[in-house]
Length: 503
Image 1: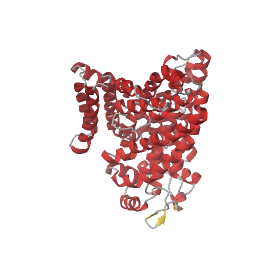
Image 2: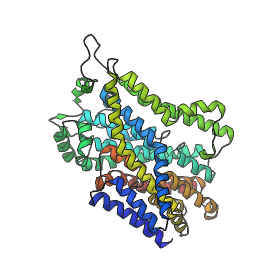
Image 3: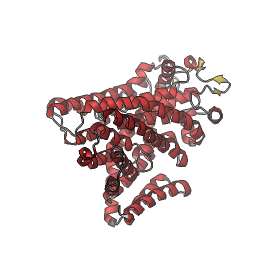
Image 4: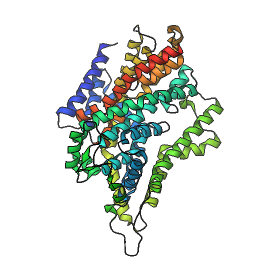
């Protein structure tokens, strides 16, 4: 590999870390500065650097920017209407005492099969917050578990774009990848949950004040004491304010489904009560629409004989379902439902406008940082750093499945996109797969597992997760980068077993 490109990558990563941890500048500025420095060292022209940053920023926000804005707005309505609280109480009853982290990992894994991680996390994060609010601790553990669950199936289970594209390039049936991916998922859920329960209490006190207030209100003292002393994290049987917090559910019936932000109902109006089923509709309906889009697209692609999503154009009969199941349209429908189903009829228009405006303000910094991460990823791609690393690692003598695994890992670290790194690894592996005796299904799973490694500053999902959780610096790296790296390492034994069985 060209040493200049390697130097550019190392300096860029180090610069982001130093700026975020040691200077007065924030992550948004750090990402932009690192993008410029990487481009300069790699020999990119000055206009080219600016164009790459703009392109990456725009492309990233085009794909998830509207989704983040709509998701935050739905979350705000869930919060102020009391629906999130009602859902949290029902959720605690359903899964029982001390099982919340397991439930969040499993739900994250389920939702991320049809929905992009970014979208799914935005949709489900209000539930994690509401549960933590009811229990008065454990938001970090729940948020990490939810994020990790989504990473699992985003990488392992089609029809998410990465594994679907890899299956097409390597000539493996999608059905076999789905079955194998689900088996891998079963083994990975405990890995994510146990890591979340271990690291959660360690980063819980480091959640920033704004998010602490948004999640816990005025219970910060109790929450920090519980987090510091719980050791095992959420679900460890810790005591908060002198009572078992699963029974803070004397708390379950005592928790009101209303919200103080709604104010008092006018004289003669019915008290505002939201049931969990109604409260779930603005979350469930968009997810079902997106799932329907996925199913219809898969059926239509099969009928057309289309192998790759990039080559797909919906047929006339499928066009409507693809339209309403697009995350943007689905979440827009969810927002309309939230406003008109969850808010009482007597809510003033000015008040609902204010809440939606507050949601837009909350989403602003997340959008900027997410877009800047996309800009850095584009600079790394345009300078050829990812391709150069793939070629270098591809020339090393390695056990068969470690070839695509390490290619995907290196490219992921270099440019941030899990999907791009999967596709790159598959493209490099396809011509040599038969020669080195690598089973196609093993190659697919190696590509998607390798791309899990170390989600960090140049990955938009890293910023979505850590900003929603209110974590910065080393706490953010421990919570999310550490989790994805542990998942990456845990996949290696599974690949060994799969290779042994198939070979």
